[in-house]
Amino acid sequence: MPVDIRDQTRTLSRLQKLELEVRRLQAMLGKVEEQTGALNAQLQQCEDPVAAAHRQQQELQKQYRSQEAELQANQERIAKSNEKLRAVKTNKEYQSGLKEIDDLKQIGSKLEDQMIACLDEIQAGHRFLKEHQAQADHRAAQIRDELEQVRRDAHESAAHLAAAQAQAAEISRQLPAELLALYRRIRDRKPDGVAVAEVRSAVCGGCHVNIPPQMYNEMQRRDRLKNCPNCDRIIFWENEDERSE
Image: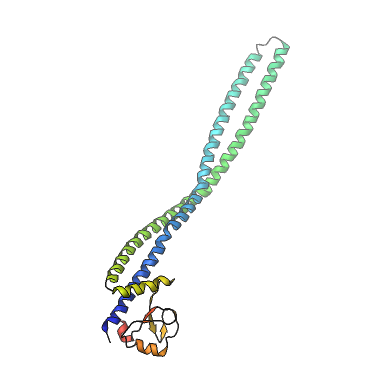
């Protein structure tokens, strides 16, 4: 029994294990952008309502101050109109002055109503912020922690990927060129990337189909490589005593 057949299949198995790990890590890293994008979207959704409420509060306070200044100016105009009224000499001028003061008072009344409505909105905004600010801050902190964990995992996975790729390249150089080419042809045809499978109890570990008895007996001699007649994967057999070697 040529020893190199067992060595070759074991080397192929090690290569396959590394390449499957490379494949897993690449898939994981391929999802990082999607994960961070989703978390950033959640963060935005969490922060936007509170930020909008703060902006609205600022606008309402600015509006209230403007109304307050306008009301003050209107009161000053009423005071001046009252002063002018005391100096009129005709009934017509007096009636005109009274109407002017009445119009100004109506303007002032509307301004006061607007200010009360504005204060109501400001108070509602305060209540909203009191209820949601702490909750939003807590959730935002959680999301930022999740983002940081994703980045740490990605950094670690990238390092493991580079190491696995380097090991796979080193093992590939240990295999005969024809055997490596055969392995890669089979691997590239398999969706799961599995090109090498162990046979146990006469069953292929790749497709789980029984190996013909004659082929199974021949495999145990391990004098040449075999391919599964069903899935075409490279198959090998080891007895229980040798599997842990």
